[in-house]
Length: 81
Image 1 (cartoon, rainbow, N blue to C red):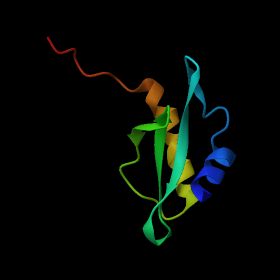
Image 2 (image 1 turned 135 degrees about the horizontal axis):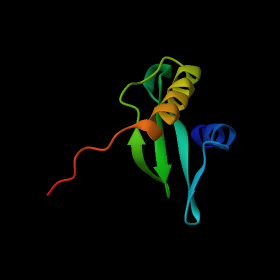
Image 3 (image 1 turned 90 degrees about the horizontal axis):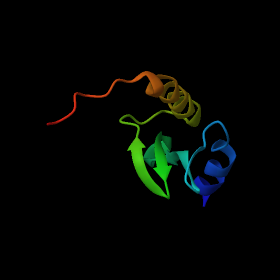
Image 4 (image 1 turned 135 degrees about the vertical axis):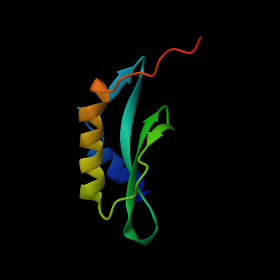
């Protein structure tokens, strides 16, 4: 329930990306010992996640912002024949 409240407060535009009728949302996920990580979810399913865990929510949130900043300029690997 705590994660749901956090998602409602943090997953607002511009963090919503609409695909069809479903929004993709970044969610901050609490871990053990007070650490945090993030997931990008589509239809409730994680499609990307942080590889690191973060000391606090603010650092996890900053990582989401950095990810958003770099993702549009990321290159694709060569096509597989």
